[in-house]
Structure formats: structure tokens, C-alpha cells
Image 1: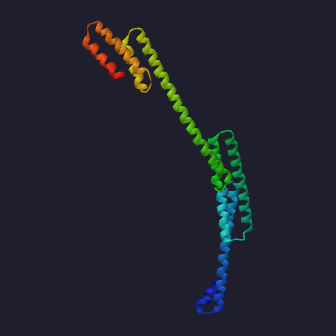
Image 2: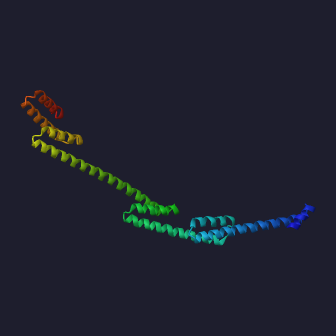
Image 3: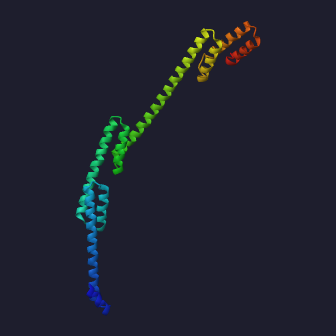
Length: 231
């Protein structure tokens, strides 16, 4: 190559010399390309053996981009596809098993793994849709149960207040009874009968005050009866 270059210095238009130089340069380029292909392929093989299939596949595809008829790169990619499919199927089967056991969180995790490797996997996608519907149903049920539980707690609280108020009423503690009835009414404004109990307590208080000749106070509680129970 050096000699041909020296000839070109003396006879720059010598065609045969120019042709030889072009051939040598092409051979050098091809040799460098083959070296690069071999290096990339070996790196892909190492990644494949280490289990880094995604990275290995990227390198084998690079090899094929440089040399489409590279048979070994094709074989490795086919093997990677098979291993991917096996892994995807294992995730799908694990997800289905979890779904059957109503372990929806675990099932979703497995199907998401499968879809991350194969976004077109119809079984994983179908089960993900089923899981989303199940989760929505469960959320509705949980909300309804919570609502019922809160209702039962409130009813128990009101019942306890009314029991205490009735107890105070039976002891002729009209003021205490009225206060407890009012608290119960604040918790359940629509509950029937509470306003009547408040009115009864106020009536007793008014009567007691009337007997003590505390007429103004008596009238005050009589007016409260009208406010609490207009009918």
C-alpha cells in the first residue's frame, strides 16, 4: 500500500495504481467491519449467558444490521424469543393462579410483568381487565360496608344517649334528660320521637318551676316546647 502511494506521488493519474489502492482500502474496511461484528457478537453471547436477554438481543440485532446473513445471531435471537415466551407464560400462569385464589394484587403484578415483556399478550391483557373490574366491585362493596358500619356505630351512639336520657327522665332529672335528648337529636335530626321526648322534659321542667312560683322560667320552657315540637 505504501509503495502504491509513492507511485501515485510520481504518477497521480496511473489508473491501475489507483485501482489497487481502492481494493486495499476496501479490504481494510471489510476487515475492520468483520472485527466490529465479531466483537459485538461476542459481547452479545456473554450477555446471553449472564441472562441479560434484552441487552443481548439488542447486540445481536446490531450484528444483523451490519451483516443480515449472520446465522449465529439469528439463532441466538430465536433462542431469546423462546426464552422470553417461556418467561411470559410463566408470569401469565402465575397470575391466573393468583386470580383464581382472589389474590388480585399479586395477579396484577404477574400480568404486568408479562405485558412488560410482551405488550401484545392477549391473555394477560384480558385478565388485567377482569382484575380492574373485580377491584372496582370490591371497592364499591368496601364503601358500602364502611357506610353500614358507620351507620351502626351512629345508631348505637344515639341509642346509648337515649337510654341515658330516659334514665335521667325516670329519675326526674328533667334538665339532664333534655340535654341528652338534644345531643341525640343533633346526631340524628330525622329520627322520630326525640323531639317529643325533649318536649316532655321541658313540660316537666316548666311544671316544676311553676310549682316553685318561678313563672318566667316556667313560661320560657313552655315556649321551648313549641319550638322543639310545634305540633
